[in-house]
Length: 122
Image (cartoon, rainbow, N blue to C red; front, side):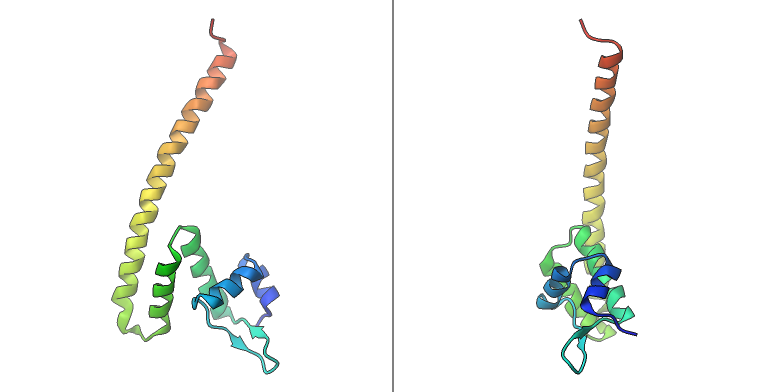
């Protein structure tokens, strides 16, 4: 079973515009029906999920393009794919650490202001 672009966008939780963008950028290669309409398979939806994950975790589009190019080739380049993902993982972990630090600061300020409400300063 295949899906139309609209149904694929709904299933993937992204916009049709994003699907077109992924295709223009060479991240996604979609089969077309005899009438020329894009048809998305379950494998396409799985790949879209991977692309969405990489995008939402901050992978630059140029790195996504390189990763997609490697995936579209044979399996001889799996070590390169792993290296891209390991590098990205380090960047995500650093971002998480930064977010955690900032969250702690926000929580500190919330706690401070709640205490001010309970015990107003003179």
